[in-house]
Image (tube, rainbow, N blue to C red; front, side, top):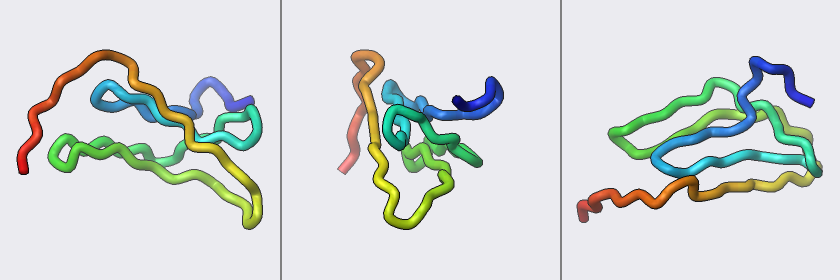
Length: 68
């Protein structure tokens, strides 16, 4: 189980994301949130050949203007 100070979930702009192996969330290192590019990122330790899951959820009903 991750320690209290470890970040295991990124939450940004109404969404949360977590990387898991089995039922264990992985620690996210150097999380970064960028409003200009509307992205959240970080890195995780990995092992070749080990399967992982990307879990995400929408936390709230949020509307954002889209430019294009």
